[in-house]
Image (cartoon, rainbow, N blue to C red; front, top):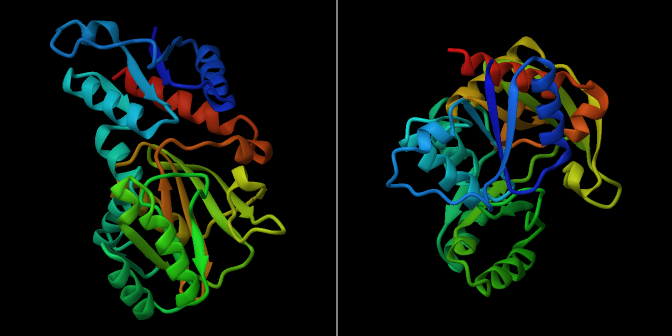
Length: 285
């Protein structure tokens, strides 16, 4: 019997659905709260404790990436891998991988000071989008219509104590429909695609911010771009976000711990079922 271990720091609807589907497929499922289980990393029994396939689903980037690093060094098979988790948790690293693998992405610049940020924004052109390199749910993602607005945003960021907020990641604002495209990739398959529509009073499309969803379908060329983006960050279970533009779709973010409750509202249980099947298949190898 395949054993699936789901790591979490808060059980969400998604983790419950994956566990139920895995059990229905005959797997033995163990849920582990990483906050409650310390690891003696010099011990050689970690591999025995995690005998099976591990699905890392922590909300906390810090907990997820460090726990994955420890388990992989003890030869435990973790989905997503440390490499994929590290790349996808950082927007700058993700963009670099997209560029290297010829995946279409918005024009992007990075600066390490207030003045340099203004210069790169001027080169890209206004309006410009400024994002933290870490984070999700659209938090601290802002659109600056001109230099005055960007200056205010930069001044606020300079007051934040974490130096990562002074890594200024700036991206061209794409004139798109009032939606983006979220593709959920499991292994080498795109299992669900949705349009995510922005709420009435917000230009961001995150479901966590009130965005709504609708089934979507990709062309052959668009599917190729999405799968190439998945492979660029090491593959696994991913949520890949793209925007429609006059140059075709542009991939702008990849989520390595994808939430899918919104997509499941129109696609049913195909997403957690596909994730469970994928994990069990790897566990049996």
